[in-house]
Image (cartoon, rainbow, N blue to C red; front, side, top):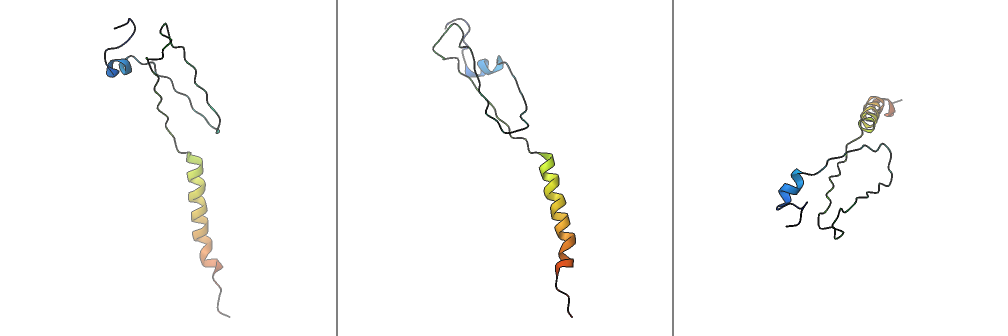
Length: 80
């Protein structure tokens, strides 16, 4: 086995370097990495992408639903 390579995928993941960042607006993200002394890319790259719900949007939906529920009885036609 060449120096700097791991015997199993588990050992490779155990020595991985973690990084994280938050995006607040939709945008394109590009990832670049240096392949090291072995230009064959056998080391590999793994990404975990997590979508975190926006609390602001959920609050707006809840407030809108409550407002509709409150106004709904007022919109019914009344007998003359």
